[in-house]
Image 1 (cartoon, rainbow, N blue to C red):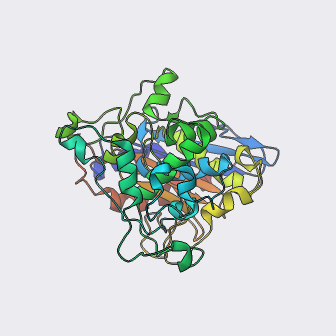
Image 2 (cartoon, rainbow, N blue to C red; image 1 turned 120 degrees about the vertical axis):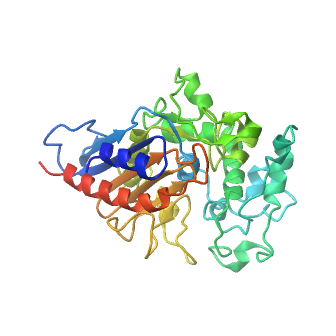
Length: 375
């Protein structure tokens, strides 16, 4: 089954108007044959081959697949993950999050609530005070997470998935690097070095390079004027950074760009390629297993049972899902990457059939990636 077959199946079965699928595999020798769009990337130790299908020219709202890009941007910018949030973000000072290390925000172990409607003023037709919204996010500590998370151990509080932590960390990274927002930092430290500036980025960043889409439509939201096209779906990201990007959402991209990003991370963890110039240790803290669940720092690990990653990817695999219907998974042992991009939230987030289709799609993409290695 090719990526095009997988994309068509997702469109038909998962109520997603559009879908694209891709996979990549690392070779130990030069590619023996040509493929749809290979080589992907390479260095003296080998090369990558890639195959994509479906809506390959469409720019999808990557939603929370932005999160690993934010974490990698922090690592590539040389920001110490032990840096307290308050040292970079003035709005966090005087809140329970002031002394929380960035690493615990990336790992969802800072004790923050899962969500706050920071965008609420927009629904009422009022502007959002960004500083006030960031202070609210920094103060949104859960009742079961009192005190300093470092007192609970090096891995902080019990993990609870939280967009708020990434919104805060993303803004901190932007200020530390002089970027307008987290989206610009991702473009500068992740996408541009990989040669992806025209294939992925914020809507604002893509437009600055002459890319006006096409963008996959997402949800029909009356208070935002109807079906959202060419703007981030996530309400808090829209409120905080508009056509830019927040730490938790805001990057758009093609499926080829997502596969390339995954391959670069995998190479970087082996000390190779664009992300390997500072050694594997510069990225290892992002993917190490942590107690209390599968969440890592920027990525999620594969759960032992019922994983959305499917059955084929190995137990050390890591990746991330996006609410709009996107996903990327990376298997360090098989040395391959799979990616599935859809707009399953169009026209409604109530379409949830993607949950059943994702594992099957990832399994098929894994099998296809293995075949790419054959002569």
